[in-house]
Length: 184
Image (cartoon, rainbow, N blue to C red):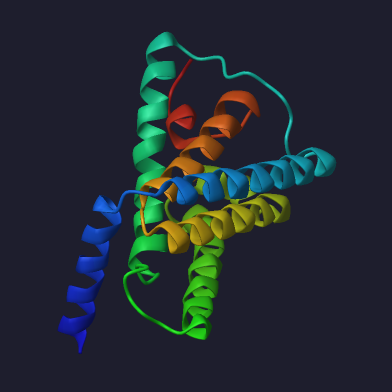
């Protein structure tokens, strides 16, 4: 049973990496992303969690940071919370089961942030335990989950996650571990 589960997860991983989103997947994902961004920005600014502020950093960091944010958190977290926890669209499954997997994935994604801050990233604790941040993270998890389930491609949720983090770090005074460890 464990061997079968591992094989299935690895197959889904392979399919998620090579599945190309269709035109309708892309249009759907853009709509989902825009709805998510408008909602997140409204929640963030109304609550006072977001403040507009351009990132001021050394030139080399402005080049390295987008690449590092693409890898972690965007790719690594989407790999785990979407690809490894959700069925690929090629798997035939009841809607009830898909919804259950999706809810578990979203829940674990949200819980991961305070757990991360409590264990390996203590500098993030004030942010990763903030109710507004967790609400916005849940909305992003929903957007990434829905677009992954529709497209079967890891790349759409990775781009949604990456654009969100880029926007937050570069334009909304968001924090990042690399920035915390760098004198600029």
